[in-house]
Length: 90
Image (cartoon, rainbow, N blue to C red; front, side, top):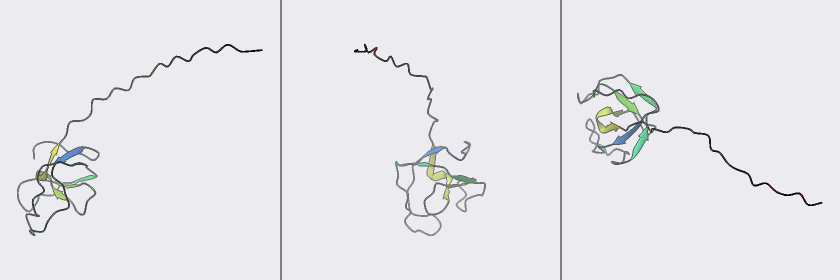
């Protein structure tokens, strides 16, 4: 993969096909987003990627199963709240 994925990034699962080495079903769900816990710079045995991603499910998965989602463009702005003025009764 040519894009840089790092810990904490959100990725979208685009390939939940059976494990391409063992043929066993995988616990990933196509269309679901996952948070990357770790990136292991290790060429996948399939030859399709140069890294394995740990998304906290079972084992590390081939990077070719995921697509990097863009980072949210959130700007924190202080919220101004006006408090009503109450008259004191004596």
